[in-house]
Length: 325
Ligand code: SF4
Image (tube, rainbow, N blue to C red; front, side):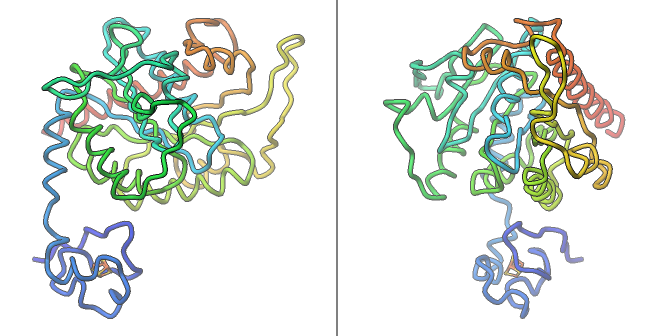
C-alpha cells in the first residue's frame, strides 16, 4: 500500500505524497523544487542524517524548540531564561543550543561573551555557565561580535547538522534550541534532522499586537505542516507594570484579544503572559537568571508558572509514551 502521508513543507499544493507511485509525475508536481528527486524515488528515502542525529542526541531526554513568527518579540530572552531557570535545579542538566546563525545572542544573554569553544577528538565542547548548564552558539565561532555571517542555505544546513552531531553534551534532561524568527532554512533543517530525536515540542513566543500575531499564526501553521508538537504559546511584553507604583499599562495593545484569543481560536494552550519589565532586560543583558535575581516579582511568578507548565507537559509526554509501549 502507498504511504502518501509524507509531504515536504516546500511541496506544491495537491502534492500526492512522497510515497506515491506518481510522486514527481503528476501535473500538480510541475515546477516543484523536489520534482526530479521525487520522480527518481530519491526523495522518499530516509535521510541517513536523521538516524545519525537521533543516535547522537539519544542521551537528551527532552528537546524544546523555541520559535517566533517575528524578530524582536523576546524569543532569545525566553530561551535563555528558560534554560537558566531550569538549571536552578541542581539535579537537572540543561543545554542551550543557539541556531540563530545570522543573529546569535546566546553568548551575551548567558554572560559568555568572548568565550571560545574547544575542539577535541570527540567534537566541540560547549561553554559552561555552571556545571549543569552548557551553551553552544555560532557566536562562539566568530572572531568578533560585530562580524556578520552571510551564508546561503546549504552552508547553514551544514552548520546546524554539525551542531546536532558534533557537540559533546553530557546527558541532558533538557536541550533548549533557540531558533531564528520565521520559518527559514534553519527551521526546515532542524525539524528534518530532529525527526527521530526526543523532541518534546515547540514553545512559540509572540507579543500581543496583531502584527506579531499574524506572523505567529504562520509559525503555528508551519508546526502543523511539519508535525511538530506545540507545547504552547507565550505572550511576551504583555502589559507594563510600573516599577514605582505597580500600575499596569498596555504598551502593545491586544486589539484583537492578543495571544489568548488566538490560542482559543486555534486550539493551542497559552502557557502564560510575561509583562514588559526593565529588570528582565537588565538580567538578560548581564547574563543573569531573572528568576534567581528577583524571585518575588510578578514577572518572575509569571515566568516560573510558564516553566512549570513546560516541565509538566514534557513529563506527561514521557509518561504517555511509556504507557503506550
Ligand atoms: S514533486 Fe514531489 S514534493 Fe513536489 S508536489 Fe510532486 S510529489 Fe510532492
